[in-house]
Image 1: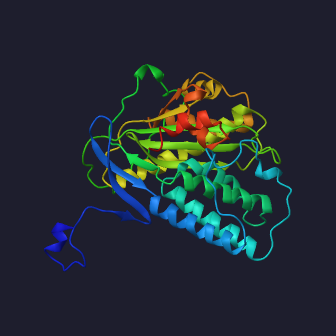
Image 2: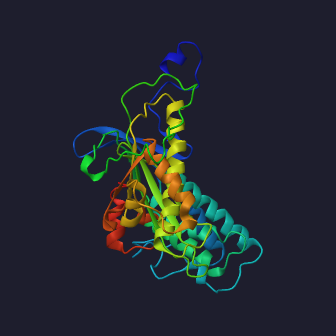
Image 3: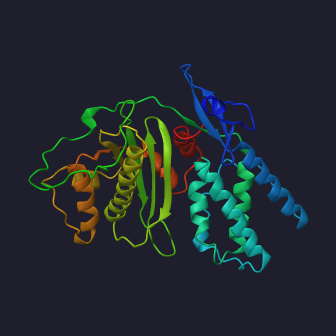
Length: 345
């Protein structure tokens, strides 16, 4: 901005950024003394809560009470089983508007409500009274947790190489080469490390028995991509749902590596992918393992080819430490807090 100010007349004097697309941009000091950038949706959340309380006031209802709201909603609430009355007229529009506000909060880093918002978003066309009440509870939770921030830490955490199995894939996928854009700019700076935690909640939807995919991708020590969505097919086994989730994550990783390279960011080392299903991890990281479930063949070969081309490497992780669990299923307060420490401050 200072360089541009020498050429053009600016409306304001150059200064450190404070806001971006509704998010508060600030500096954050880590425990080791380093100061890094952080993003918070504090102002956006505060204004959104005020809007909801104004709506409730017009309805003659009590305002949002965050007391005791340690989770966005009760662990035993299943929106797909809600049989309360269907909303009509303006209430449908209100539900859709509030869901849109919550979805943008997720984009601004409020990943602690991602799973709940993803579940409710599937009822946009035909919401029920119980779904609207669940939306109000999310806003009540946000009212009591409005200061959370996402920190972008550039520290490169190098994993233990023994977690990953090195294999020769030439005999199985001899032509596997990661596509590199021909017109990418000259890379600057050191390599960035991509890490992905992926999980699936098998048959998590109690009505359709579809599984739910969740994953988060880190660049160095910063979460930059988060995903929570119901799968498009019904899988008969945990293996199938986890394989499907892993395939979706691999597609996202390939797209991200392309984007980073086109931005001039060096991305020459494999992305580290962590999965808590040992059967899936073994199937896609050891060349000699064959597939017994033929209907999973596309996901199976897609992932193995990505490993063979050196785009990713896969390791098993204990389920209790898998951050992606946060995006696939309801969790206890203690488990939420344990995993949330890896995502928000």
